[in-house]
Length: 254
Image 1 (spheres, rainbow, N blue to C red):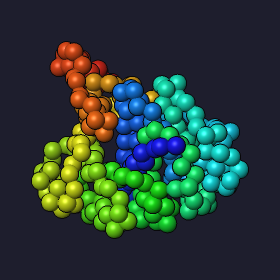
Image 2 (tube, rainbow, N blue to C red):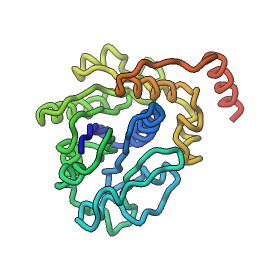
Image 3 (cartoon, helix red, strand yellow):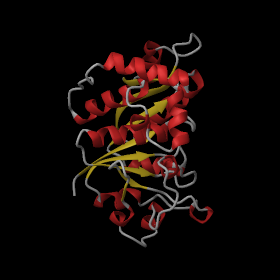
Image 4 (cartoon, rainbow, N blue to C red):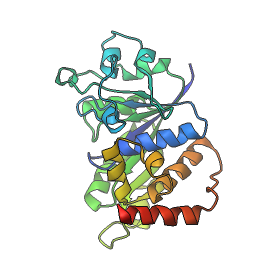
């Protein structure tokens, strides 16, 4: 089979890696791409939880142990997105990701890996399994410094670093600006995802943001990035300014 495997990685936890994987994956699916998202954070697995599905008969851990073929662990979300979850059971947190690259060979299409943060052995196994890498970071100096370490390791492993997604950007003066980020990390910025309360609300509703609030700032950015990755031209929805205005009113009303 032929697949394109992109690792969604970060230097630390809590920067929005899983949210990015889910929404970017769904945006790509909506463009007609054959896409599968994989929860490779077997220690703190929450991709399935964020999508409102808590229990799966077959998980990535079963595949890694050789119990099942990876295609048996593929589930289709009601929104149409294919996902491969990891188990949230305490009995499954010590899964060995060393053969992750091998088991992914049976997948076809575009594969997004929601990676563990940092440079642990599991995170390095995920990097090894990737063809390309997208780094997710928030715009604070310390977080970006950790992102730089991951970028350098990925380059040393001869992975193509597509660039950085700067998440939860607010334009505050204490944040790194785009020029500083590009200079510091020596990598292009793929997207600046603005801070938006709808992200937390969508997590509470266990619904991907681009389905929950499709005209919010972050949703538009995910859709633009999906078009870039798929080699398609982004076409804004009709009456986008009015729709964004209405979405903003709904946000203020809660």
